[in-house]
Length: 188
Image (cartoon, rainbow, N blue to C red; front, side, top):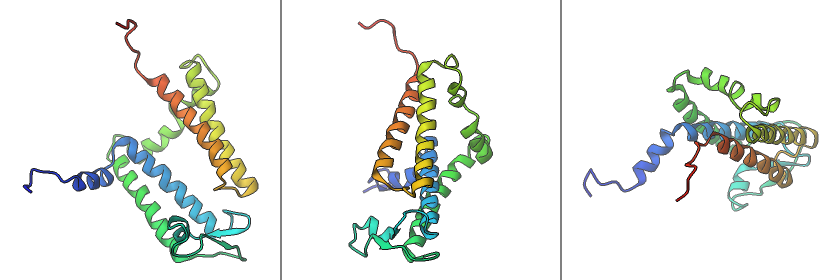
């Protein structure tokens, strides 16, 4: 194989190590969410009865049980270190790409709060009813997940995920439809 031919593995590695703008934001979101769940698991606030073993969860209990009865105090195991390292790596890759953009990490942080989505919560005329619905779906999705997690320690409950994911998916879809360019009015 010549140097000009590409076997596909280098392009996948390059795509992961140098993510695009959208992928870098997903890396940051998923990595921070994983770190948040790992810390909750270590301090015993992730589930009312169990401590998760990340190694057991990701290997479908081939290496060890996925759930262990929760004891008193903090429980820190090797799989927590591995999981946190993977999540930290995702966050690091995402921030590497974000820091190279105009505004850097501070600009990215501001864009989470100051953007065209949140003003639509109170003003449907801002970008239309579609953005109004998108903003409310996103807000309700995040609020529902936080409320249920805090009050019931259900951070990984499938029912909570189904409601949260549905609201977030509708929110992102409505936002994308609002921001999509207008099409041709004539269909031939």
